[in-house]
Amino acid sequence: MGPSTGALASIEGQDGAEVPNGDDTSVAVLEKHGHPPPSPRAALHFHEKITANNAPYQGIHPLNSAESHQAHLPGLVQRALHALPRADHSDPLTTFALPCPTGDGSVTHHLKPTFISATRGPGMRSSLATGLDTAKGLALALSVPLVGVHHMQAHLLTPRLCNALATPSSTGFPGASGTPSTNPPPSTSDQEHPSFPLLTLLISGGHTLLLHSTSLTSHIQLASTADIAAGDCIDKIARL
Image (cartoon, rainbow, N blue to C red):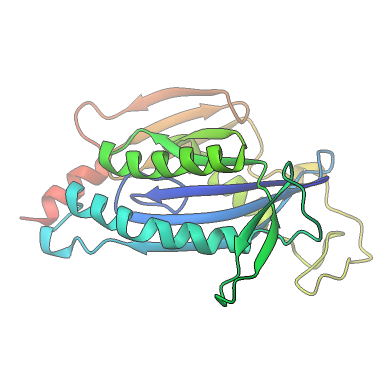
């Protein structure tokens, strides 16, 4: 995708839109702009989520959630593919064709994503398998790499993603109107937030972790629960 990096992320998450392992079926198309310094900025071209109805089970039911993934993921992926940037030419190495939604037999050409990503774990195997199998098929069909995402690492890095997606009009980057500001860009420390090193307390349905991180890929677990996660405990108490 030229100087930018695009990723079609197939994601289902239990308690966040960034990771697949529970009752949320979610797909996103994310594009990263530039290289540091300054800090990379990102754009979200597509993001939709469908949550399985697990209310009758008073908690996440693995089979019901897996059936919801299988029913809704194909439609979400199809809409996400159409959201990829259009290409003004046809090149089998960098573009691919999709049938036009109008059904008139015409096709539209889109830029290929740089890679496909999907959560590899930890999580419920049935939910993970749906996302991973779909991602493998997409990566093979488009001839692009597949990147496995760690569930909890994605949660930990989500604040940095949100910061990269934010483009205040007071910065030197394009604002909501797409017009660059005349103000100087923020410092690197302002752009890369939260900055390393950092401490993170992750509390989800299946995991409770205190982590020390020194980079995007360097994380040390300092503490965890002795038996079950805090979220799991709350779920059980709520059923009483």
